[in-house]
Image (tube, rainbow, N blue to C red; front, side):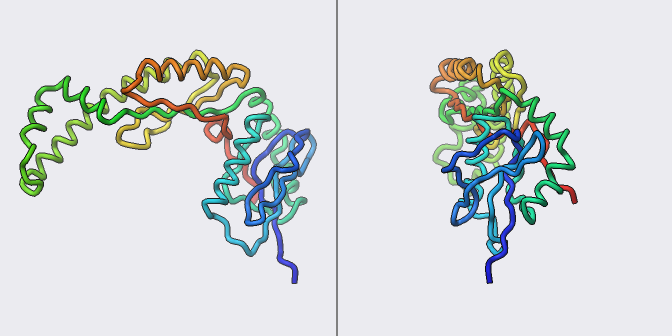
Length: 252
């Protein structure tokens, strides 16, 4: 008996988009990508066996990789991972037709724009030297712990760590503001994400004109040059614009 299949939906695109023959998506067999069209919009889809559970790291990577590749060429409204509909007609009836005008407007607003990610992270030794040099009391407390047993100084070490963390937070606020100030002139919009780690300065998502990508790259390079040896700055993208679009949802 043939295995039942469904339609996995990656995102919404303009109806005139053509897929590359080598484009592949989610699934062990990496099914070929196609477009289900309705009027001025379409859905990027592939067939997927319904008896196959989703959620492997390879599945997630395939989903993100496809959307990021598309976002570098045409506007796309990304679906969250795991959207599966019954068949191609259901894709029209439950997703494209009910939201046609909404999706069409959103795609037009994204024309010529793409999302990029800027990640900035302190060089740990450098920022620690900086905060300790600014506050001799912190350095004194740190020196007083050297050579003493951990079990004897546990509370002191925790208190010192919290004090150093607070000092790093002060620098982080100032430096994150400097990053935003440097990016605002070359982007259409930006979102400051919560820093993911203890020594991360900022994680910034920006929406920028693809035609001004060189200006964005230059702004990030200037930050990296200014903070060389103190902060590591990376630019990623273009990527799918998750931070600047509402998630398309099929009709219940």
